[in-house]
Length: 116
Length: 114
Image 1 (spheres, chains in turn purple, red):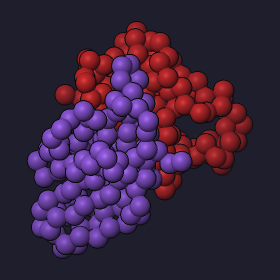
Image 2: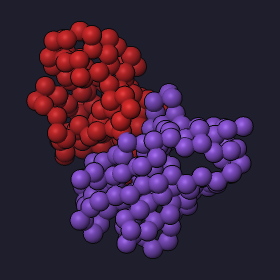
Image 3: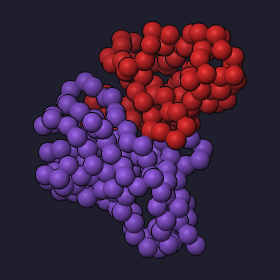
Image 4: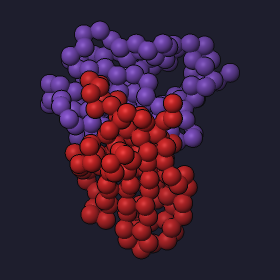
């Protein structure tokens, strides 16, 4: 089974509107972390936001928030007030377990296009 | 502050050749990881190094090897290149003591195998 599933290959949003990018995950670990990264056409993966499995509050970073629903195993990214510069590929990723491992498992990504 | 730097940015090789990719982590980061991103897919974990020791290895053949140097920079080596090795190779560094363990990526080395 896929560990990270992103079901939206492509999404369009009007500038200044909010958009939600979906991510579901599969793990049997109690301790895990969930990440969202942005990849512009330059190729660099840019860290956006992190949610730990024990965090009770949804993570927020500026215009980015992570809608964490543990029972449903979903970690959707919400981008408020979209900007043209938000057009990029977005990846959801998971780190399983605690301790020394820093290995991330990535989903297949969602291509977001912001329309003027 | 400089981010993660990788070299070369682009390279073209032929089947059977070998390639060495280089990475310098963010200052203060002692952990380096390598990922392979094939076109249209998410990155896949290859290796992780911390304090010059291998701490994790993904599902890649023995043709792939890596090492980390005393200054925490790293090299990824791929021998006997195959067409399927064509990909963007991403290096990431992290601050080991960070609870989240978020990775900070470079812009990658884009390898084309002909």
